[in-house]
Length: 163
Image (cartoon, helix red, strand yellow):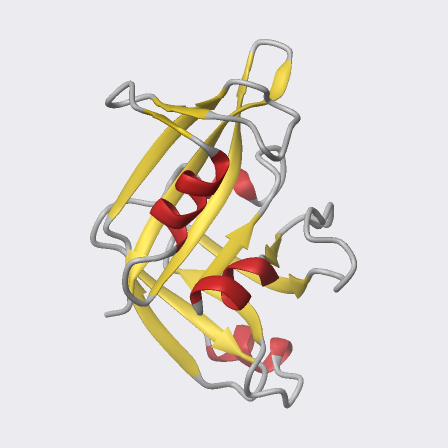
């Protein structure tokens, strides 16, 4: 992991530049353009830092397409250590707690309502945002769930509170 960290360093102590989970993923993290809150990188082995999460909740949200780095998010399991890497080489440790899956009732709409696949509960996009991104210091991984021909049929959220 030391070499991975060295390759990511950019000197910016306040910027998340990478994420590492042993035997699961080691991803570069890129920032969203300030003018595009829906931007998700299409570069392999790269997650996107969800700026709105930091601005609203103070937490970390990491986005990736399910056909790229997001595919690794499905392999995250409760109890695994998550290392966030900052531009100055410092790290924070989180631990995967749980995952939740939701069906998007309007898959390509950012304001879709969502149905929890475990409980059947329906949530607005705003309620879902606060449920998965707030509530104590945490990192949340988000990717889409594909079903049939619909790449954005649902959403997977993996929650990792600060250790």
